[in-house]
Image: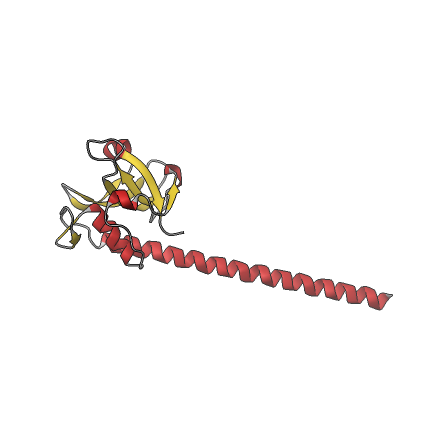
Length: 167
């Protein structure tokens, strides 16, 4: 009997060791995926910031002049993610995100024209530093490519939706 009891304990120990190893390997895979996602987000933001100071040009997609959706398209192309050409079409892609759940890399969309529901502007969240301090990079018609606080009076009133392209 003593031998059988020791055998069962050994089998149980072996099973527990296998379970622990399996759990560790699963966590390693999740950790690798999270790091890859973080690298993609950092690359999108780096690519967008490389356009800082570029003048605004309606329909532009180059360093000589760029518009808001051209900026987001170029930034996401740096990680081989193709976005539609216009802000309103980009607003239909990805996963919808609540304002309070924004993270760097998310796209934020605004209605800056005469129609309050029509999406006409887009930017990329670059930093989230608290509830009222969310920076995003965008191509401003007057300033060119700049980073702005989403909670500035102008943009807070015009915010319509946020989307996550990298999951």
